[in-house]
Image 1 (cartoon, rainbow, N blue to C red):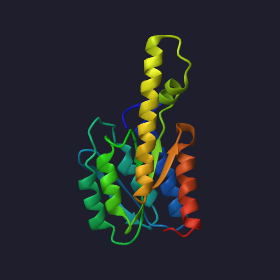
Image 2 (image 1 turned 90 degrees about the horizontal axis):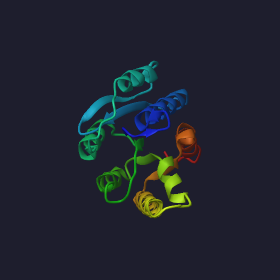
Image 3 (image 1 turned 45 degrees about the vertical axis):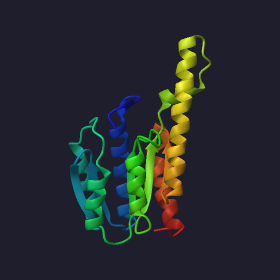
Image 4 (image 1 turned 30 degrees about the vertical axis):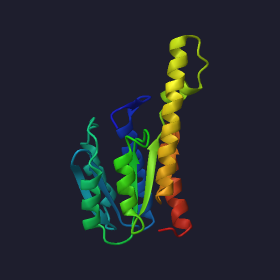
Length: 194
């Protein structure tokens, strides 16, 4: 989540979306919590409905910095399984690349189902999309376009695999990231999937 999209890091965008989602869920009287992790769990706030929970989540997110570590999904989801006994919507803000690099995520998302409903919110990369859709004017640009197209196709395969394993996936651009996450949460609530 260290890469930048415009003026913000992917972590900044995920933090903003997580806080807004927590605020909306708390206003609807849902218990909300938060876990941030990379190679290890960095912050954990158990789900709660008490007043001030969104503030506690803000404090838990405040000092986070993006790293280039591969996330340890096994450790994070194991902690979650021990702490969240009731069925819950588990929202994972992530950076999906392809099925190979996301294989650990794919395996652990499967383990969440059917006890929990995983919602993965993935941020699209506008630079990659721009490269895949450009009209090349040189051989180098033609290669860049071909590689970008392959990366996007493999990313789509990862999204389809996640959906096939029971996850709900939101694939959103930076400008619609927060709204897309909140809208999908509200949709899931209205259709009683939680």
